[in-house]
Length: 277
Ligand code: HPA
Image 1 (cartoon, rainbow, N blue to C red):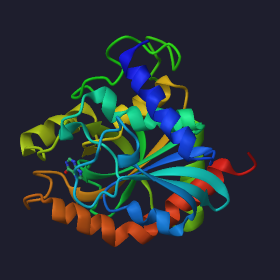
Image 2: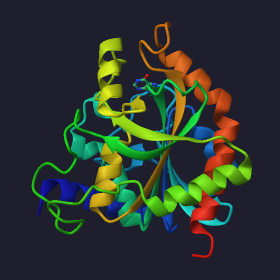
Image 3: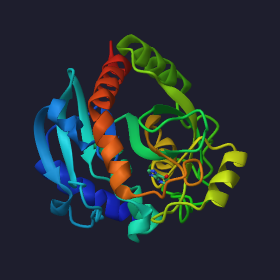
C-alpha cells in the first residue's frame, strides 16, 4: 500500500477506537479563531498528540486537538490548531488531518484562516469569502503515488470552492448583517511575511489576500470528494499595502478583536449549509 495512505489509515484506526461521534462537516479554525469551540455543544475531544503519526502544530496559541460536537444542531469536527507547511512537514503530512476528517465521515470542509489583504478595497478586520485560490507557490499535496482509494490521479480544480456553498454563505452573511468581501486567496510557504514587491506581483496575478495555509487543504479535500468553502479574516493589510511592518502579534490581535463576529458568521453559515440535510 501507498505509504501516505498507510499512515492515514493507521491514524484513522486510532481515532475510530477513541471516538464514536460522526461529523457531517469538518471545520478548520485559523489563527485566533479557536474560540469557536466555546459556542459548540462539545461531545468529545481528541488531542493530536494521542494520534501516533499525526503531525504536531508548533505555532504558539494553537491548541492542537479535534473537537467533536454540535454547532446549532449540526454534527461537526473542528480542528483547534492546524498544521502548516512552514513547520517543516512534508506537504502530504500537512493535509493528513483534512483526509482524516473525510475518513471520519465529514462530507463538507469549511476552511478559515487569517490572511493579509492585497486588494486595496480591503480593511483589517474584514471577512473575505474565498472564491478561488492560487496555490502554485507551494507543492501540490497530491504529488507522489496517487491514493486511488481517495480520488483520481488528475482531479479537476475548476470549482474548488463550491458555488452552491458560496451562495449559501453570502446569504448567511446578509442575514446576520455581517459585511463579506470576496476574492482569491494565494498560499505562500511562509513563515516569513512577504516583501512589498511580492505583494505587488501577487496582486497582478489576481490574488486578493495572502496566507500560509488553506489552499493545499482545499485541494486535498477536493481530491477526496469533499465540498469545500472558506472564509479569510483579513487580519492586516499585506506588506507595502500598509506602511507598517507586519507582526504575528498584530495578526493575532485583529483576529481576536473580530472573533465574536466571525463566530456568528461561521455558526450561521454552518447551520444554513446543513439545513434540511
Ligand atoms: N501574509 C501571509 N500570511 C498572513 C498574513 C500576511 O500578510 N496575515 C496573516 N497571515
